[in-house]
Image (cartoon, rainbow, N blue to C red; front, side):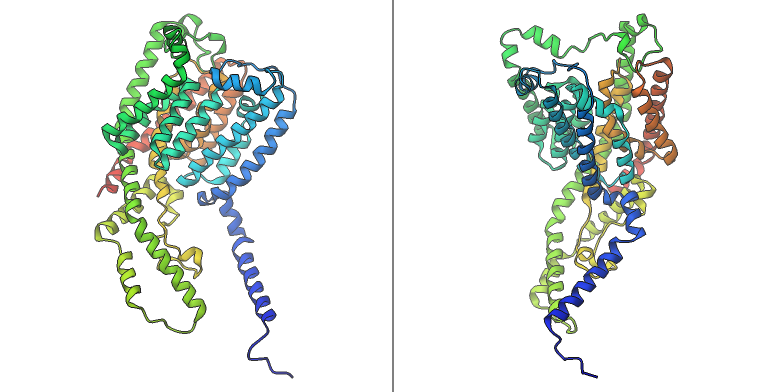
Amino acid sequence: MGKIPANPPKSVLNRKENQSLFSKIRKEYISITFAKSLIFDPARLPLISILILAAELVLNVFVVQSDTGPLVYPAGFVYIYSALYFLTSHGTNIRLAQYVFVGIYLLQLMLVLRLYCKSRKIPPYVMAITIFTSYRIHSIYVLRLFNDPIAILFLYAALNVFIDGRWTLGSVMLSLGVSVKMNILLFAPAILLLYITNLGWLKTMLQLTVCAMIQLILGAPFLLTHPWQYIKGSFDLGRVFEHKWTVNYRFLEPEIFESKMFHLALLGLHLTLLVVFASPCYKYFQNYCRLRHLEMMLLPQIEAQNRAEKEKEKKSKKAPNQALPASKENKQEKEQEKLTADQEKFLKSFEKGIKKMSGKQQQQQKVERAPEESPAPNSATNKFSIHFDRSTQLALLPIFLSNFIGIVCARSLHYQFYVWYFHSLPYLTWYTEYTNSLKFLLLLLLEFCWNTYPSTVLSSIVLHTCHLILLVGIGRKMFRRIPDLAQLNK
């Protein structure tokens, strides 16, 4: 029997390394545990988002290839629809316009999924089920070509850059959304609070000036010629809608529906609810602002820790069986990596508070605090990270809630208005403490209401009932979580 060579050939070593790599991949990714995590773990949503976008591209192309009618909402705002008019050979190439809206839909969906991925709030299967099963949403985007999706696209672009701390660009995107359709103003109360808590009053005024300047620049050709007619037509808060198109008030008589007192009552309810929820929303934004500042403060320490771990891993590969003495430079680096007592105390309260506010699913997830807490000795788990992006939850909830309150109190909802809050519904629903069965039932009933054409007394009543149940669920948890918000400030 031949002896095993002391120095095996390189091919043998490469084969062993490949076998070890395949073994690790099979153990980590080809398992029931990994498959379940793709369905239920919000941290896996970035991967699932890619699959959702690919599937949506195929689905929307299929929808475009089916029969459709003429363009039913050709007005929009002048610039965008004028561009579409010339792009589509003076409005004759409707198929090309539909593909443009496929691009708009996929871009908006990408922006929505990016926010959800950062928040780690919603399980992947919830997003997949909600997105793929809405007939009405696909119809609004790629069959009807309304201007509502374009306005909402700018809104989600604004939210993404706000979360990234790019305030002026966010203000530009937000104002562009308002220039397409005025419903974006339903988000304005929460975004104003977001400005104030993050920027202070002076910089808030500067951002509002940016928003106003965008409106003046875009409206200049009309303001310089027929200013009153343009302002009255574009920003008509007293517009009376026709009863035959309403989705939410079919059960009212036309005389009541069109009465001024009814409109004033809804406006009063809208303002009252905004005032009631103002305090907890402000606290959410305060804590979001503080966590973002803490992230900036800890970033050098996190980067230093990651550099140290990378160096340690390189040295362990070179001499796995030799103990490496700590140099003076390493000792100094470790001193820089240490957190202060106040930072440690805050991180502990942050973890505890954010888990409580996020619900049972988030309590099962651990925030990685230090390498020694990671069980597996690989570079992915050794990387020092604190998922501060999960604090995005504190910003998204008030913004989505402000818009939802506006929809609850809307004088009339038309079918294309579904896009105003559709993509925020999974977030709002999963914020409540209702059972998963009730959450899915609410989403199913809302889809039923928006797909009932023409609307009926039953569909309108069900729509209001779902809105009320959802609002109560949000409010009940939000006000009970105020002590948890205070805990973040300790």
